[in-house]
Amino acid sequence: NIPLTPETARDQERRIRREIANSNERRRMQSINAGFQSLKTLIPHSDGEKLSK
Image 1 (tube, rainbow, N blue to C red):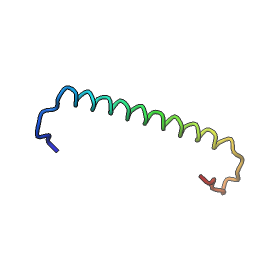
Image 2: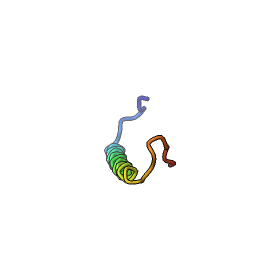
Image 3: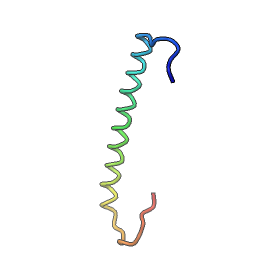
């Protein structure tokens, strides 16, 4: 998709802010998932048993 008009400074700033927010959200979700993974190792279960979500 090629824009029909050049990107204005405001549009560019908005896009950059959104990219930063997306990056921060990805990092936050990775941290949460890592926390759940480490908690999962502390829950007792047999080797053949699948843990529910």
